[in-house]
Amino acid sequence: MICNRGFVGILLALFSVSPSIAAPSLDTKGCATAYEAGQDYFAAKSSIEFSDNFSVAYFGNYKIVTVDRPYPGGQPEHYVLVQCGTPSPDLGPDMANVPRISVPVQSLFSGSTAQAPALVTVGGLKALTGVARRDFIATPEVIAHMETAGVVEYETSGVVDIEAVVAARPDVFMAGGSGEAEIQRLAAAGIAVVNFADWQETSPLGRAEWVKFMGLFFNAEAKADESFAAVAKRYAAAEALVSGVAEDDKPFVLSGQAFGGVFFAAGGKSFIAQLIADAGGRYVFADNTSTGSFEIHDLEQLVTRAREAKVWIQAAMTYRNLTDIAAENPRLAALPAAQAGEVWIPDALKGPNGGVQFYELGTMRPDLVLLDLISILYPEKLPGYKRVFNRAITID
Image (cartoon, helix red, strand yellow):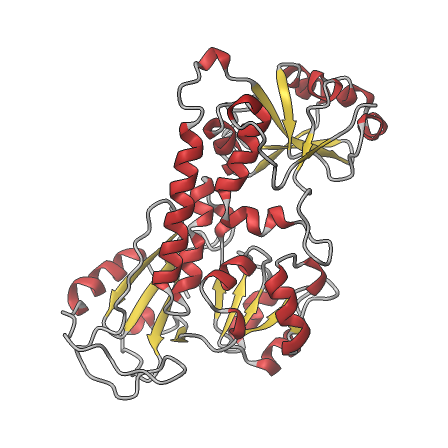
């Protein structure tokens, strides 16, 4: 699955073709009815604007998708997506072990709940034949599909059931950006493993752009591009609401939650830190260099920084009131944001089974997440706005 990215560039130069005038003839499954050499089978082509973790190159009847960071410490992976009804290309020994996937895919096992809204958007829901855990999914359309389509649940015990996946032989096993041993065993068994690694992006729009990644597997570039363009436009409009706020007037913000005596804070280079900046806030740990979360074991370090924060976001979902925070740690409850009731939890919107939509819809709709945050930091800029994902603790 590993190949250097420069090789894809060489292929692009060697095998690019001029599109034929006539559109290819496709059957009801989207497969070519007759192969014609030199035909361009992908009329709509995605270009990647914000993501720094995946790319695509088009070559007539196939496309090569690259994920630079499929999982922490992982080497870049390539996937060759071949228009069904056309021959698989010979790409030489360097690409011999790269998965060949016929598109549009007809069956897909999903390993991340973040994939759910993307599947719906690109029209790929009918192909969903397996999920890790049913009860983790919050997207209503996916829940309805699972109730009628006999979808396989393959990770009920917390470990991938290798036998169940291999027996189903999906066209694609779309992992959630994991290099765990079970995933590697699936690849060794001949299952096409693809990593949907949106969570390794450091910008909100970079994460949202993974709808285009999903679209590539269904030849649904047009749908994916249209959806993302609308989100990006709304995000820019929301950002413009606070663009004129002077730096000194921007409130400080804390993000994170305590667990087992350790505070897990959003990294200073994470997408959460970017959201705070785009919403006109100043993150109290903006100088941190982590792109994910980082641990604070010294509560004094946390309290010293958090005293400046007017607002605390992404707090623990167990918090309902100030008493809950005090039970965790009285010093956290004494923070100015807590005392003012400005502690916000992103679990206000839930799916039919109780799953939190922030981790699904929120990933693909950062425009809504940004509006929520702006309404918290600057309520006067969005009078009457009803928050989608966030609720606040009560202090009485």
